[in-house]
Amino acid sequence: MTLQQIRNIVDNSVSSDWHKIEGNIIERWEWGQQNGQNYTQPISHDMLAVFKSDVDVSMAWGAVICDAFSEPWHKKLPDPSAKSVLVVLRHNGAKVDDWTFVNVDGGRYIVPLPHFNNGAYEIPVDMMPLGNLVFDLYSAGGVHSDLSVLLSCCGVKVV
Image 1 (cartoon, rainbow, N blue to C red):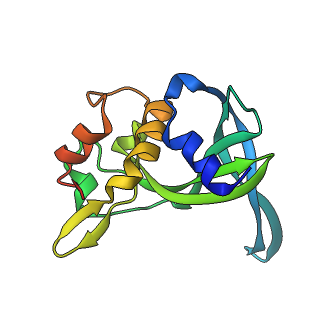
Image 2 (image 1 turned 90 degrees about the horizontal axis):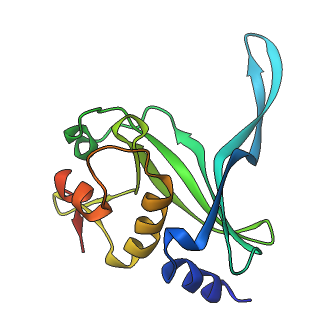
């Protein structure tokens, strides 16, 4: 299976096509020193979604990139706290692609990371199929049931 075929599965699927599993899926290991002591700890995703029609295809997300993410666009939501997280596309358990998303509104939603361009925050339209899928798989309640509405509320344009 090619990378484009795997991406097409994601882009042409809806959340009901996926089986969601909560748990720790190790993304990578971090090591170093803290308080004079050596440490090793896993950096883990907390969610896995397996494509029901082909269990070789899966996505994992939740491994934190930046715990104290702060940009003006997400502060328009009721809870201004946010963190950037990794979303990983996998085939046979191997990472084949990844994207940065932002967990916003105190953890209620997950959205693709907008880019600042010409004075505005933007998300490319070709990112919306993946963005909608992950948003629908993750959504933890709140008033926004649609990614486009949430982005509009935050002043983020789809271009």
